Amino acid sequence: MANEVERDSLDLRYEGFRLKAPAVEERLLGSIAQRGIEAPLEGVEVQGRAVLLNGFKPVSLRPQAAPGHRAL
Image 1: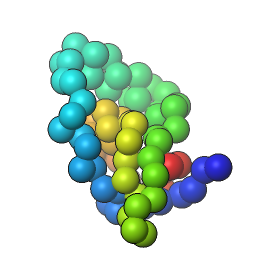
Image 2: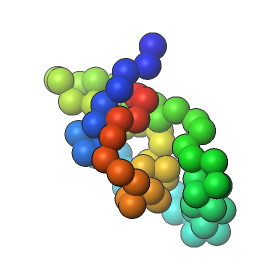
Image 3: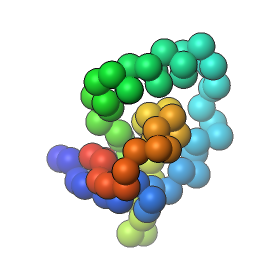
Image 4: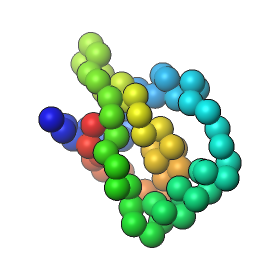
């Protein structure tokens, strides 16, 4: 089941556990620029907050996107 949440309301507490790969992030940024974010973000709701578990790179690589909703 998908829910819509404000991107600014995502809890990114686990983002620091993801591995950084600049070359992969560069390719992903190009893909996002051409086709947008195709894969849904994954997370859970904990005490009323949307905690992001998977999808940190699309969220962090697209800061220039207009504020809006993303599937969680």
